[in-house]
Structures are given as structure tokens and as C-alpha cells.
Length: 401
Image 1 (tube, rainbow, N blue to C red):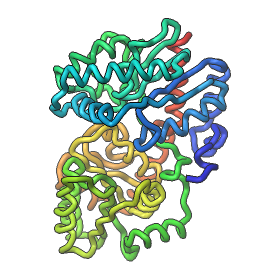
Image 2 (cartoon, rainbow, N blue to C red):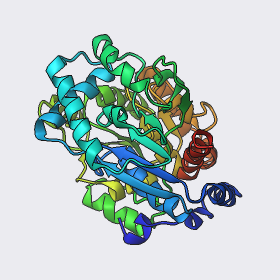
Image 3 (cartoon, rainbow, N blue to C red):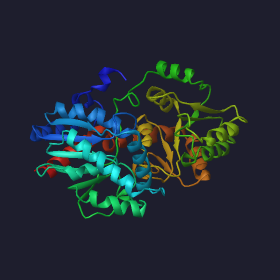
């Protein structure tokens, strides 16, 4: 990512955000000037949430809101415990002992003594810093921002951690269906895409072609695309089966792109075996930090499929729609919130449904263009980072008034 993109200012979004959105945010920022906002997370690297904070923190400071980003520090055993606890909160049965929970409290207390948590509003992201609330000051307001699905946590674990969540002034989820029952106020803030990031910036055709050539994706015919991990949750084999139905009627390719699998990634071998019988199926192993490559793939595809069996908010759907592509997605996670079925793409529940909708679009190129344009405008109005910024400013105003 270039420095110019990394340090984009709010004014840089005027050409891509809805008309008047930037001026509206500037007016809100003026009213909140001088207040202090502290974000706390477990890392500055990796996930979508981290990438978003990398963009929001400089913009908030530009608005005159003193915004900092604190990082929790823990040893290797702490990180292992946090991975276990995180999986348990998302509903996967885990063994979490009293000693592990005691270790979480001890690390939180150590970090509370080190971190600067004296803001008007402290926003704690996800599981690792949850227990910091034990050390909150009386003057600051505290919000827990949980980015995953907390609707079916492991009961024993949630019984132990729920009292800590109850000590926050509010809890923020990405979807109503992800929210756990709590007595404190709960708010919904959808995930968003940054149109100026490397993943979503405008990209010339020559640059797209160069990336596709490096990835060995042929450009001799239209291609369908799915970007996602090579695991059963993302159902790459189901996408291949849908493509096979489509292939009987339309001469297209299928590109499945994802990061190299970790230990036990047996699904990739199955995908490669299924693809080996068809030269028009390309299985692409993406490089580390593949933002430019995914941008090029999404822009070059004719239709994007996103058919996970389970997912979080699934913001990859919005990223593809921002590039003017109709998306055929499953009904998992936040995908139905992003796709206006029949207007910006389609939601489906079966392989046969995905194949039918893909054939319908390929048989009507004008519909592909119309849905793609509608999808881009839908994302502009509802899922850009400027809307996300407005939601956080509203929380700051409401909770610190």
C-alpha cells in the first residue's frame, strides 16, 4: 500500500462517498473536537477490523478528535488461551479451565497498568482485551466492540465472561443476529469497505492484466470468481459443482482464489483434484497480503460467487459489489444484508440455485451491467468507511454527551 493511500484524509473521499457525506462528518467532528477516543485491540496486523482502524484513527485525529490505538501485550501462552477463548465464544466447544481464565485476568491487569486508557470513550475490540474493563476509571465511558457471532457461545465460558461484558456502558455487534442477550445497551454497526484501500482502489486495465498474468489466470473467456479460504466452511467444492452446471450452457472459466491452507488443509487437495479434470478451472494460491491481486481478480471477473456455509459479516461481498460486479451469495452471516436479491445480485441456498442464477445472468449481459451498477451504488450508500466513521462519531456523541 502506498503512503498516499495509507494516510488518506477525509476530504479524499468526496468523489466516492454519497453527496454531502463528507461535509456532514466534518460538522459532527467540529462538535466533538477535543474529545478523546481510545481503541484497544490485540494486534495491529491481519484482519479486516485492524485494516479499518489503520484508516479510521488518522481520519479521526484529522477531525480534531484525539484518537489513539493501544495494543494488548501477552506471552505465547496468553495468545494460545485467547485463540481458545475466541473459538469458544463463536460457538466451537473448547476446554477452558479456571487457570486459563485467571491468566486472562492477570494479563489484563498488567496491560491496564501500562496502557493509556484515559479517554472520554474507550472502545475495546473483540475478545483479548475484554477483561480490561475491570480497571476502568470512573470518568471514561467504555464500549465493547465484538466483531463476530456471539449468538451461540459455549455456555460455561460465556457464563464466566458475561459479567465482564455487563460492566461496559454499551456493546456493539455487526448484526442483530450476532448479538448476545445483555442488560446493557446494544448497538449495531455494520462492517464497511474502504474505497481508497489497495483492495478497492481504481485499477487500470493494464495493471489488472499484469496481476492476472502473474497469477496465471487466462483472459481468453469470461470467468466466474470466488475468493475465500480453501476449507469446507467456504464450500469451494460446491462452487465447482455449480460451475459444472453452468459450463453445460456457457463457455466460461472458474477461478478459485485463496490463501495457502494451514496444517490439515486437505480441502485444497480435493479442490485441485476436482479442477485437474477441467482446464477451465483455475485454483490460485494467493501471496501474503494479496490486496492488489484480489482487486485485479474482482475487477476482471464477470460474476463473483461467495457461497460460504458459515461466515461472519462477509464484507468480501461488499468489496466485489463496489467494483460493479453482481454477486451470487449464500444466506450465511451478513451476506443477505449486503445483497439486495434481484437488484444487486442473488442470495441462494443450494448449488443448483447458484448455478441457475449464474446462468440467468450470463444469458442476459445487460442485466449483469445493471445489477453491477446498482450494487456499487448500494455499497456507496450503506457500506463505505464514511458511514462507519459516522456510526463511531454517533457513539462518541451519544455516550459522552
